[in-house]
Length: 73
Image 1: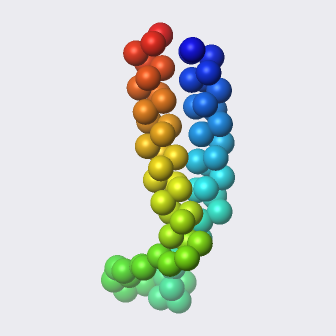
Image 2: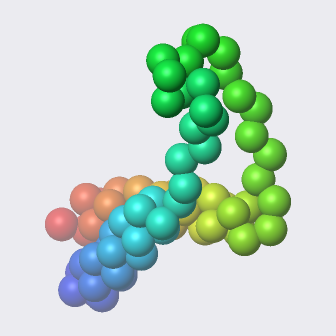
């Protein structure tokens, strides 16, 4: 049981890293020239929204697996 949890946690960590790395950072032209300190509200649509939701789900799965392994060991 513990080896299955370890394999699932390794798999989820690799997928989580992949999802984080392929996300684009939304920085406008103002960030290139120093910015003005304003925050930009970003609405995710399409594939970007699916990728964001997958990242959140994988993060939650990774946390649950880590807690489950902590209780088992």
